Image (tube, rainbow, N blue to C red):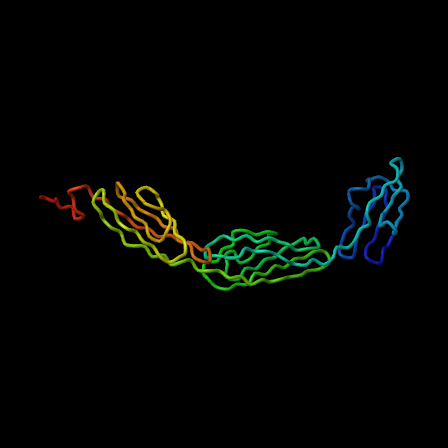
Length: 239
């Protein structure tokens, strides 16, 4: 049976098969019809159903086959992308695509055939184009979005310092809008561009600096603690 010259349905001794103009071979008509000899096949256009009468298995029906529409490509990506940040992309294409082809200019990897690729990384700041092409049996479609990759903040930290045990020193950092210091031992605070350190032993402090683009980088400063009576050049203080 021919339906609008788009596809053909054929009743056999082993069930119902169909083929459209994109197919090279006959395929079983869905899993809702039994794979047994079919005595009669009818199309109910008013209800968009196909009905078959079988020998000893009764009458069966299921939805008519419809040619899928051409897919429409669409995707989402996070905003505020930073250099060296692994990024994931989510396919939001419609009309049931069966293949996906991504192109990421300037990134690693540069291409992907996954539906929802992840771990895409840009190593340099700038403006880049991401393109998604999708296909199904009815055709193909593509779309492109321009994304901005932001540079990491330039972190500046006060130089390392040597202090006698029990004394304090002020540590400063710049280059961002928020600052988080660690470890917390010996610090009067763990946030802010300036903190006071009174460590009991030599400590390496790390500050994580985040800028207005939510990009982050780190800096470190070593506070060396010398025992009482010993200077930072290891000479003994007498009197």
